[in-house]
Length: 185
Picture (tube, rainbow, N blue to C red):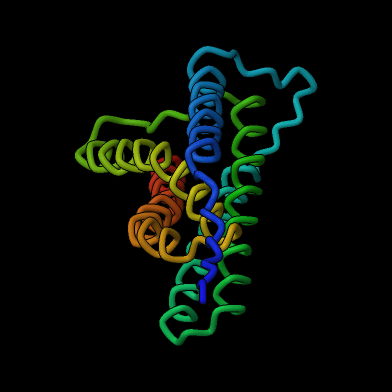
């Protein structure tokens, strides 16, 4: 008697998707560099949407909260609640990005007033925030890709890095706003 073995379908390669995520992340980063440092502010209508920085901080804070809630859900093995929390964090971060782009397109770059020791701390936090936000984008997208495509072991491996970086970027976004607002008060 002959035993017939059925081959399990090989998981499709993740390389094209990850390459696309990296390409999108590079293009997005280059766009933001252009927008912030090269493109002149274009508030021709004088909209002066002064609430946008506060909205950005709020969205970052909401994203951080959703991340922490999602973390507690995954620790309790409440997968659907974890997924909902992480999608919520992603939505808040995406809304932040849209608001951030609008703010910088209209008003340009913000500068910390003065030259105190607090400014040095502000610049250190801002630099780490900016650098890690560049890292966070492809990590977040890749983590979501692995989860949504059912590659849970890969999702878990990368989420161990994504979570603390994404949380740090969200929290320091609020801190940067608060420090800048306090310095201007």
